[in-house]
Length: 379
Image 1 (cartoon, helix red, strand yellow):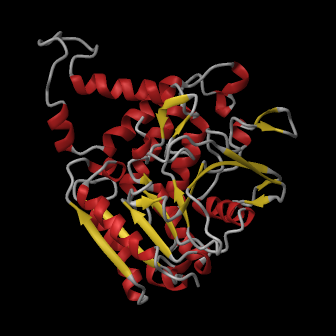
Image 2 (cartoon, rainbow, N blue to C red):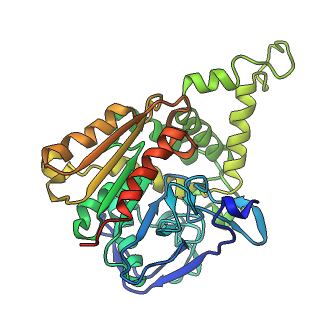
């Protein structure tokens, strides 16, 4: 690891909350923990903080690496660090594992103190609104009254949008990257098929597989394989794998023959080895439920009338899961409400995963915008 290229060695922190959290569903979590990491220094005015919201399979480890695991590099290390687009020489950056996650924050695999057993299926269904409420409590704990920016890609972008609606006075800039104002029917359908793969796995046991000492590997593996297909573009898969055969000939059977099959199964197996099936269900349902216009008769213009932040909206040309059209659906109500909004459509061959990858134009847009944010006064 080249230290000049990274924030360097980092460590996770744990925040405990004893004030009950009332979920949008009406369920109550009496107490909970959030795991988070911070990078850079908070200035005296506490006005240079940036919150990074993670996507479906993300977590708190955004940048840097651990002293005992130098190979474990943060999932957005190319974006966050000294001199990088999210410049930790200028900003105090926070990454956290959302409530319901499986990387340290309270979630389905955590022990329910009332039973002494993992929460499992009893963990409440969670929404983007619930996440943002818990994130605001973390900001309170850290003494941060207002974020210079809240940034997220995909499901993280939805959280960034919700910040502008739930706490308009607490965020000056919102970055919604490869996101959408709400899922299409097709996207909800993809999520339902993925969940069905998990729910019908015999090892799922209604969500309480922990007590049986098993993991619904088959279901989680299939869910990830399906999801991964939607994160890539047809061109990217064609360029990387084409119709390449592993052994140079047809075997006329159902074992792995094509390189793309091998890749997908490897991704599915890897994911199933560390991700929690109940967390996957919760994250996809949070995606499904997010719809700021739901309480406004479907009118996004009215929904975003509460927002006061400046916005940067970024899409990628080959992203068919959250297409550029979906990003323009975010831009329209922002313009309608006379908010300051910048929009960039990045030409990329890598589909939805483009938001995670280093791309000169994309990184230049983020860098230029945040250079201006660094000079802004807090409000």
